Length: 419
Image (cartoon, rainbow, N blue to C red; front, side, top):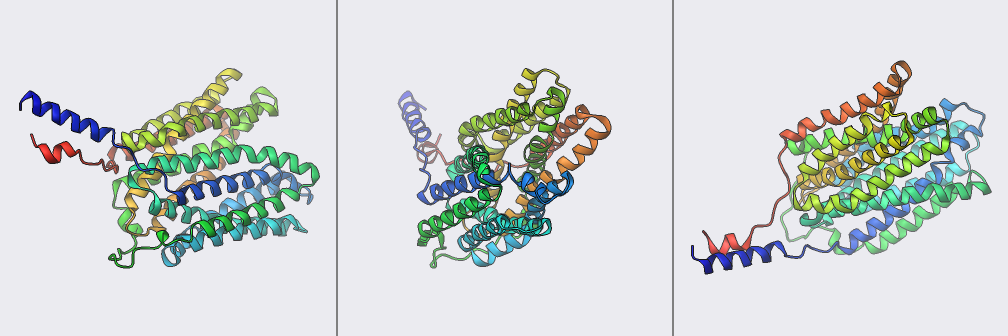
């Protein structure tokens, strides 16, 4: 090959590398905005829900059960939600889910007994899993494959930022009564549903009638894919560590060691900052270098951050490790969700596959704090967090054996010039 040929090839390769990636579609921006509203609303009620439950003259365990009921119903209804997405389509299930949660929240605001509160709040979990699974399915269908990581990052960022702002507004609203945040949440969900209904009503959400219809991806088929099995493992570990233990056990450890409730809030805020920072780059990296490296690094970082945090006695060390654990979560989430989207693809539906992935995360978030709480009661916080780190490290193994699902665009130089 002569110098001229090599120069032309290099120029073509440079052009291919610099090829601009697709912009995020407007429909996905609508979903991201709705995710922000939903997260703000959820944050409105999160800080007042335990106090609202205690107002019915129940103990701490009963008040905690109201919080767990929502997650339990999410987990229980996930398979049905996935089947509904496959049968009815993403948009109607998404909208119905939002309205179910809105109705549940409004009814919760007017509960007259603890039993009513427990049931009404739990029923909201049904709507939650409906719009969660259908939103994932919409993102799979609408996101260009080349930017799936970036789309997942944008969606996760909207939820994270909304979740950080929500409790602030919720605390302010609670001054006017513990029931008011639930009413405001219901109104916000109805508004989000109306916006999504209007903006996502186009034909782009419906399959091309002239195109051959691909059958839905069956769960048993997806389970035969090493990448999907790895995503289930990391989803469970991520739910256990970042959605469960970090939220439920880390604040208790911070208060026990440093004897100040404010420390718990600061630790969670610092972890959220770490996640938000990582999300700004992890999605793009997942689309450039691959899904596997981001998940592997994220799981190890999570294990390193949370695994030793229970041994810390210094406030500075606690906050640094909280930040590290947050970074780990921000690295894992977009890449594993993009992997699931790659497995499903844009040509077929995969409601049951997406529901199973969501169930894995919810199961980890429910089981993790309970088991780690038992370990902390018996052996102390140190071994409890070490066990959490071990769960994240165990999830590394399937990813070491998994295939990379990112399909790189062919280099035009390879297609036209040869060797």
